[in-house]
Length: 384
Length: 203
Image (cartoon, rainbow over all chains, first blue to last red; front, side, top):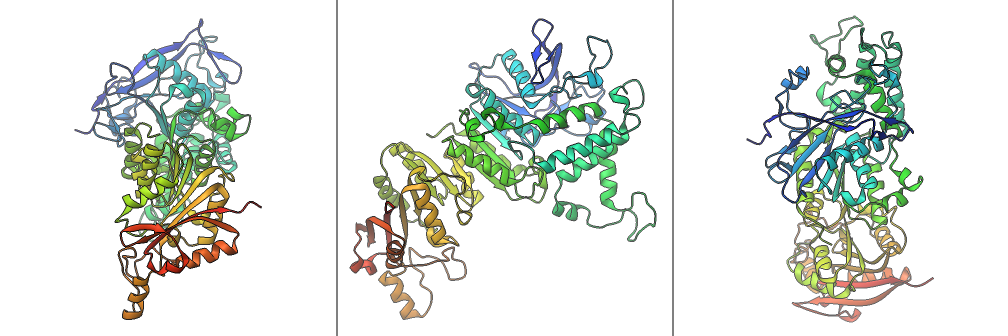
């Protein structure tokens, strides 16, 4: 009843040899195909569209149940609804009775949009590491092509959490006149040194896997162990100390004492191993390298030559910033700094820090509080 | 932070003090009621600061920009003299570091508008003396154990601070019964609530 129901992904080619997509690295890429999903109805004046932006391992399937899990060869989609299903649907925060919701897979990913596993037109083989280094700016530039293709001049809102939040911010900076409001959740203007360090270790795990073979593993065994380690590390950063204590404590998997072996003995080990192992079935190691690199490079202040105030002055949309108290990957303090910077520049900005023990994952879990904020923010147009 | 029984009336007074089209920072903005009024009636550029997330949410729902921050942590990042008016409407008595908050108010604002329940109000003092218990009145409606008002003070306490801190009190108003009259130090005990417009003396 409150679900968008069965969903079908769409594919569209948004760059070809005559109209390649220019990239921040200086190269151009073509062809580029984009997978996207839409929910709700675009109104007659095309002003009720909201673009949802996904995070590192996300996809275009943001809500509902995929009707194409088998055809897409993504069996995991059968077991769960879209990644933000609790936020998107009839009567939900992103209300599909009112809004036309769009979500597309990012460039360099492995869920239908062109990425390292796609065929390189120059070789007829998968790109692998010949895929150009892409950035958050490139993703947004490609999303702009999608929005124009869908006949939308101005988005009612752009919204996302984590790396998706950075895309929302980038939208407000890159296309100030095309975004009425931006919702940036559990995110920041740039990743901290600690965040960079975690990504470096994650990539190292992948690239030192003997199966990695310089990214040319598509016809052989993939670097699954490295990718699993990368994902395990990621999951540590998504939780908080409190949430790990609550969820696992020091409990043992079997019985109530040590097993005196070096395998998985603690529940938290079992959890991480499960997360790592299930991830390799659904994600491409090369995509992980490219997307974490884009995450590393992102710095919103580059719109102001390193000065965040100068960058913020570009923004014309209303902005809602939401952080979570126990998020140490994108700490509340960084979000507050952005909020104050936008206020300094006299922008319409609201900031809320939600008390949560879930850590970074809270943006997917603290649905009730987040919904109140998002719904309230979307419903009023500007008061001043 | 006291029950805002006559809040609309209070808000009208503040609306009268704020000039058209000015920039206003409301410290402890609650549900954003005053700011939306100022935005609608005085065309101000408004920003609220509030530490209770439920109040923050209500402010956002009104379409008023608000930052979820704790005043006791200061207004770091907001530049000096960046707002024409900074308002502390019945908030000062509820903060942990009132003098720090006043300093921050005067740092970022041209004028400060401070209103608070007057603990020197005769009825309050009489109640304390006659019952030997913490007063519970319409402007101080809480019990001693659940009051958010952790720094109660009198109108004269506030004026002492202003004198010591080289702060000019440009205007004072007293709530006497149901009327609002100009504040006078001699009649301070008649005022249940007071409001002062303050400005830092030019250095």
